[in-house]
Length: 336
Image (tube, rainbow, N blue to C red):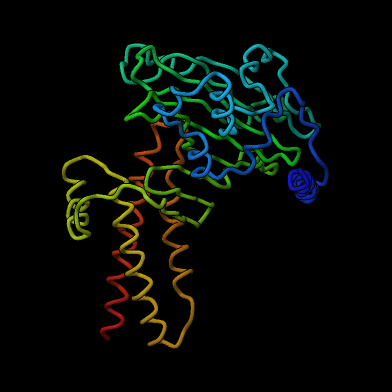
């Protein structure tokens, strides 16, 4: 409990230095503070359910088993949001700007598309300045399909007194090989740029089977490998060859790109170290790496779960191309 109080105090201190005062966020629309800081991999482990074990438990034991997942213990009731939102759903009402909630059907144009969620709703947050909507973002949603084989998607949020906004998108799948649960996929951190009246995306976390991807704008791209993640039963050379063939086949595979990216990242570090030694300079890798990241992170961040795979594929493909060009340039300098 002391740690929670300390964390909340730090949020208030940070908000003072950002805005000069805290924002008076309407409590009934504030969301859940848990989402201000999330370890996607740990959350997935906590919310993973072994169906064989679960079905053997009695009612009391099932409640205890489910309580391992923090998403089952939230104090903020997201299910009531639909009833709360109306024409006067102001989250914050200040002299400089206002924050307001809106609600709409999720994917209203996908009712005839079998593999897209077609039921549920989206809740948006609008930034209003001088009675005009300056910017808008997807704050929360639930999306599911009348096809029972598809996943159900949920997005949660927290609006801090500092004006920082955090969202977490997750999917709940049907049992696969005796496992089910809620899988966190996409966490975002925004703040409010009062100069331009825009929601500024500061950080993104993407949960995938092989790794957690961290993007900190404008120039940081980090990957954290999950121990025990299933790897390809092929050699690194075969992985590179397959990756090189993907553009010609018109397909994509970001998990294959992840392996190739890590290989070239290691090669790049070694080459730059040799060049630094030759030119008697230090730490040029971090500068080059940040420049490459910045060039590739201009890709629009994913909004929905379906956007994640093409996003990772595009970013990793861009980074690998940058790595290859840089390695080739360094090898040329080393040869002279």
